Length: 186
Image (tube, rainbow, N blue to C red):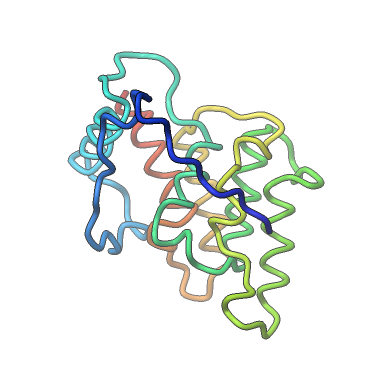
């Protein structure tokens, strides 16, 4: 898949006033457990810092935004497998309120990538989660705020399709669960 080169903002752009946050290794067992209130609050604080203001109200995190957040985690570099595809399809169906994945949508793209990746290919030729979900909001026919029920459905889809029945840390299910927690605490 082709990806456009990111553009550097102009020097007088206000977004350059905030330096990029640097993170150490954030990989842990987060994907296999619920977020604590402290972790959700820390994520919200980081979001507010990045936006430059405290968000008093307004819409919460959407399913599309949660999918795109997955691309920015360590899991974003992981080759898409069947459990990722199932979780993405479940998220898409919940966002669009349909009982099937959209033809050409993010779920179908994920399924195609997982099928391709299951073949014996060199790792560099495999499609990553980031390749699939980095522009999920554009690929979704409709979007909605993540609820606890959405998170439970996505988690269920991911673990049903893994032999070890554990979600991927920082993966699709973990990102959707984190978004649901943020929305619930709003």
